[in-house]
Length: 418
Ligand SMILES: NC(=O)c1ccc[n+]([C@@H]2O[C@H](COP(=O)([O-])OP(=O)(O)OC[C@H]3O[C@@H](n4cnc5c(N)ncnc54)[C@H](O)[C@@H]3O)[C@@H](O)[C@H]2O)c1
Image (tube, rainbow, N blue to C red; front, side):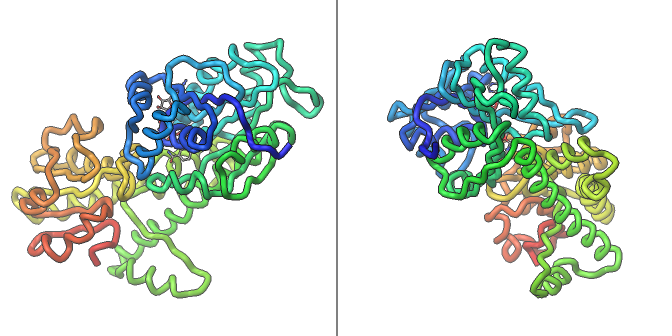
């Protein structure tokens, strides 16, 4: 019962989660087939390349492909187990968009054979893993789905949420504890056998809805704490008190650990996942909703501050340092830095805005409509700028305080130039 999985495994979605998981399994001897609807991604993985930046991933991908353990395709193959790691964004009304998950399930269903395992890794609202069984059942009435009254199920279905941190994925995918929630205890046990191949952290077995909710709660917890720091920053600013100093002092209390304020909350998870809780229990989620609103308001506040500073100049140039959603990664999804730049560019259409990021080599699509926004290298941008706005604390930017900023108006949203 406790033996690690052996067999052929297909992973749907070769993104930030699916590809590292594929590599973690393939480098430990599992035959992994990576499936993606994006042909460019499939071509890159097939060449042993990584279509995005993540430390230590490239060497593992090229090794796994060279060993013949990892292949990539656009067609979902027959396998012994399937992991679904496709996007779960939200709709305009903040409900979860499960269309990618449903499409992936519809690709898997025709291939299923009795004894197969299906694991949903995509972050999902409570009840999604159960829906997955219903979607499969609709396509494959010949297969017995797992539920408490069906001890002899043909298919084992579970949710195993992912909690890795971009920039540290290859370490955390191995060392983090894993929550594996099955539609039945047997499903959890069978799904856990996959993670036993590579996970060094503890594997915690539970039911599917608890696993779904635990993942959402983790990110809502982070979001609420960030909102607290961001709200403190607003209050301190209005009282002309240095928020960084206040937090430094308060955090010397043995049971206080206030996070850092910033220009907003970005990435694929924290700005999205709390909404799945809010839409599941809208009348009861007042704190979680408010935290989302506080954090979503943040880029507007930062942009307003920059626009106010620009009024001091006749024709200022503004350098905005950082475009990614966090430091030292190339991920620009849901990046508050990009939102800040867009808001400034829209408010000051006559002003030159130079954007710089060591991890981004193009003006992101969200900014391409602004004729006054241009990509520039950081040193040239700062040299030319009257106002320098630090939006992301990439390592090379931290050092600029002492060398580059003399005589400029510096607005540090991350507290690294203090
Ligand atoms: N990125 C993170 O740090 C992180 C952390 C924890 C959880 N998650 C969750 O993991 C899931 C995947 O996130 P990600 O960051 O890897 O996304 P991603 O966008 O990097 O990758 C998803 C991949 O799925 C592919 N895809 C879409 N539909 C498909 C289909 N029907 N069949 C096959 N491939 C398909 C896309 O082309 C894309 O390459 C999401 O639910 C996300 O919330 C992400």
